[in-house]
Image 1 (tube, rainbow, N blue to C red):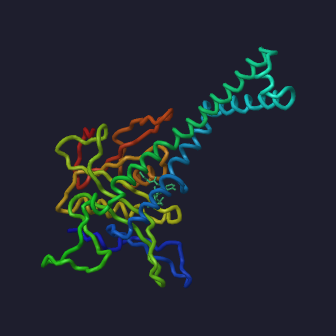
Image 2: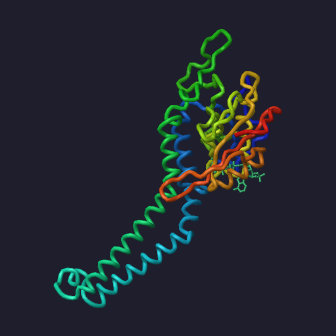
Image 3: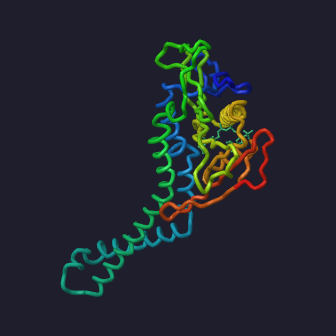
Length: 310
Ligand SMILES: CC(C)(COP(=O)(O)OP(=O)(O)OC[C@H]1O[C@@H](n2cnc3c(N)ncnc32)[C@H](O)[C@@H]1OP(=O)(O)O)[C@@H](O)C(=O)NCCC(=O)NCCS
């Protein structure tokens, strides 16, 4: 079996330095139980709030869109008209409650209704821009990331005599099938302090409409995230290398790896294109009033080439 627990050959040292000034070393290895919290925290940061998180890009595009700017202008104007009525002439409550000036009453009710409608549209657009990713992250945290060892079928490493090698509470694990989960961790050369800075997994093939043709052995690469403080150091590339080596190992011999990403993850798309993944399907996933463009990428392994992929 391919050794998943060694340092990746060409991994860089990070820019982090400890008190002695030495740079931390990056290590790619199979997930262990003690990584669970670190992985979950990292996943939430990278996909929801951290630099380069897709909801941030989607939100930025949404608030620059003509419909959002139009609704914002209408909202501001309606609030200004209401405020002018309230402060410059009679109080709104007085106009609404007094028996006189029904034209002024109708005008004020209409302006307030327009303001509320515009506000509802603005809030709904913001919710739609981030909701897709919120739902995705929450599903991941409730499913595979809740029990990584169980979901990815990782077993404790055993010796040839079938005895468990390590009698520790946090033993080394090994994937028993094609599914697997790796982490990248930094290790300080002096203090030996470790930190999970990236992860990746290989799982079942994706569901329709992303499914592959029958009879072709395909797995999906998922959960690819790198800490915002450790980017552009080749760590994602090293994790993908570990994943591909596992997929190509003799006991698996997958024909291809597929993965999904969105329009709002431009760095990931550059990474996948650089590593030889090609878009084979584009589709829009509707969430609220937003369309999220989703791309299916594919890379054929070991000379497996299928002209009609999907
Ligand atoms: C996408 C992501 C995983 C890349 O991680 P990384 O460790 O910085 O990537 P690497 O250093 O291995 O970069 C490899 C190549 O990817 C491309 N790339 C990565 N980040 C890039 C960026 N910010 N701008 C342009 N190209 C970038 C480049 O081609 C790069 O090669 P180069 O450095 O020789 O130019 C990381 O930015 C991330 O976690 N983003 C947020 C979460 C996310 O979108 N995950 C993908 C889920 S599908």
